[in-house]
Image 1 (cartoon, rainbow, N blue to C red):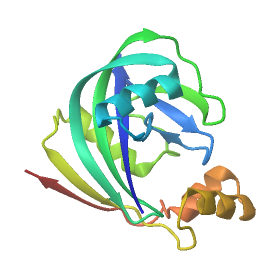
Image 2 (image 1 turned 180 degrees about the vertical axis):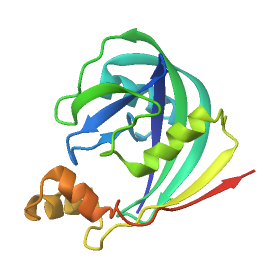
Image 3 (image 1 turned 90 degrees about the vertical axis):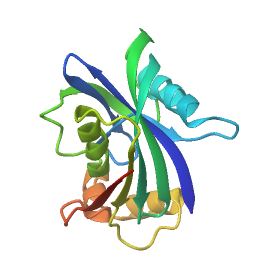
Image 4 (image 1 turned 60 degrees about the vertical axis):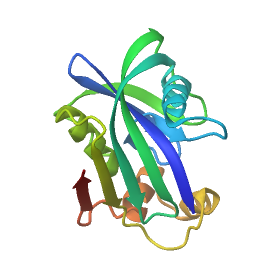
Length: 179
């Protein structure tokens, strides 16, 4: 399965905004899948608002990331954004918490592949990077519903399941290709 998505890197006062996902109880950048008839930029703005309550204006494309190897191959555009309105509020049923973290003190429990988006933002990358990230996961889930069923039957907490399923304690397999 191939999925297309967008994430948003929102930085204020040297801190990046992360959302704690309800499904796996780990931190991630705000973002999500593209809806039919929607551009990647529109997705980024919509997802930022839905997940955080903040209205954002995109400043630039950080890079394109192909996250290969999970139950779906995700192709993600990551944008830098500035807050232009709204108030911080979690999205019920999807986001448990919102928090700004210092760029040099990201939480341990977060999507490790989103760290690259943040590192590229800090390095000043602006759309020239095309990245392939090998997401090592266990077999058994062919889609999100099967992943969640596997999670719910595992007997693990959602956070423990994330670490077990995505083998985040294993070697990081990531290559960067720059035009």
